[in-house]
Length: 298
Image (cartoon, one colour):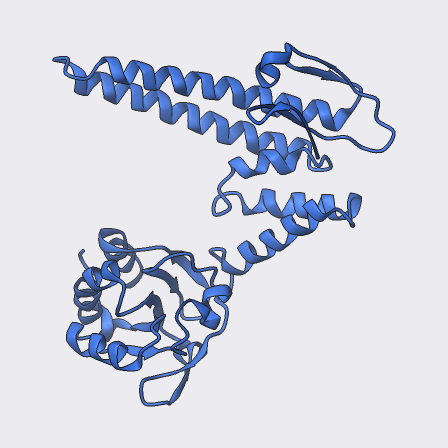
């Protein structure tokens, strides 16, 4: 990957392989919107994708302008609904385009740009295919190596994968492995006493635990606390009767990297075999999933 730059905000990204002889035509004051390229298959593929995204951005910018003009009008709600519908359709089309692009061009490093438009949760197969193909062709590329690390991390935490093992101590110093809960539906709940959104969500989790604990449901609370006293006090104050573990290492906890935790609360729902069946569930979404999985009304 290279960047042809005239100024900080006037540039285009290029793919250049050894031996390529590129011909680039563009209006110099506005490279991105006007450039065309010949002489390299990979470079032209990247151009095609960039051109699609450029047109997509123009369409969405136009929608935002239109949305700004309907404010305060009598039929504003219906117009906004129409605008949102068109916007969602454009997003869906962009996803489909990026997915098809990667499938058709999995041997091109240009697909590394396209795949960033895809949701790893919904398109993990595309990520895995691109990883396989590019590793063969570009085994020494730092771009490909970094992408492979990203995909491996996604794969470990994808729905359908086995949840990574956690072995931490409870407040009494007793080691409680996550695997000890096999045979139950388990909510892995990453939280901390200092996390306000976590504490706000706790009453909802308590209510759902009481509803489903006799139906094969368990919670494995993993705290990112650093002060044991604060951790234990929060457990008592919020009435958290389920299993609680922590290494009291704050953001340096081993689970942060293991589960790629960027913020809390974060949850993973695993089945009786330790397989991830959902993640990121809170509030009504958690209640609906538990009702679906364990039965009973929401």
